[in-house]
Amino acid sequence: MEPVITVGLDGSPESLAAARWAAAEADRRGLTLHLLHAWIMLSPDATGIPSPKDQNYWARRILDNAQTELDERHPGLSIVEDMVAEEAGPALLEAASRAQMVVLGSRAVAHVQSFFLGDISTDVASRAERPVVLVREGMDEEAPSPAQEGGVVVGLGLHGPGDELLEFAFDAAASRGVPLRAVHGHSLPVQAHLHWGAKSDVGDKIAEDAREKLNEALRPWREKFPGVQVTDVVRLESPARAAVREARGADLLVVGRRKHRGALAGRLGPVAHAAAHHAACPLAVVPHD
Figure 1 (tube, rainbow, N blue to C red):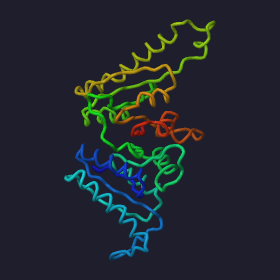
Figure 2: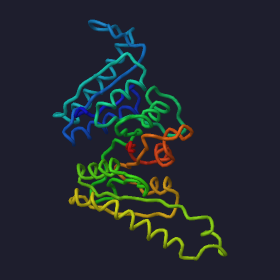
Figure 3: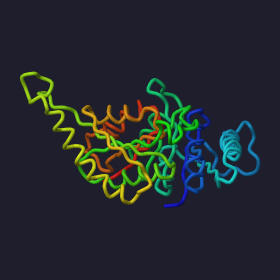
Figure 4: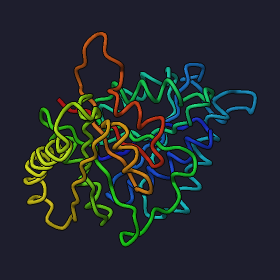
């Protein structure tokens, strides 16, 4: 794995927002920023200065304009440009295998256009070997200070290992100097909503058990990152809704994705899928076993 953060650029406002977010993250972590533009129609053997009639000319403009802006924002940041004659999806997945993370622009649900965005960003987030961060236009603006709401939110299940997810979330909070909120959502059983069904304290019992398991999962990471202020949150609602609600006003939402899903399962799990469409802050999808 190389010490780089890769961002996919297609010249859209969303991909530029992703580039700004990625540049700030690379600067914060002391990493190199890798600007990648991929399109199958590029000429890999082009020499000299391309003509404005050539696709290579506009591809170069996209990269150069982005680098100029990012150089002004982060004067000491190491930035490399890369222009490849490949389909965007495979090119990004290959880059992801070598980078610490990949950052992509993402549109709201109603929009379907754009080269890198939509299906490609979802496909990369569902298949990449490394974390993928999805950023929508406007999300690259200055985040709240640690004293404000802000912070990093991580959505946690309580079944199976989650070391990759927690390591990414704690590291993100530590590098920013912001608090971490670990949220677990648990839907109530149907009988809990019926006055003749389960005992009235069923919700309290579920929340208490979940909080104990959540604290147990967080304990070793609290010890490893003693400088990170951690709050555990248990919501009696679906995990997807809990994560999206808790991420309102956050700097970053971190959710997991199982590396190996069944043949009939969706490309992203329900929490990651809901967050990709509805989270109001940048979303990190972290693959884990």
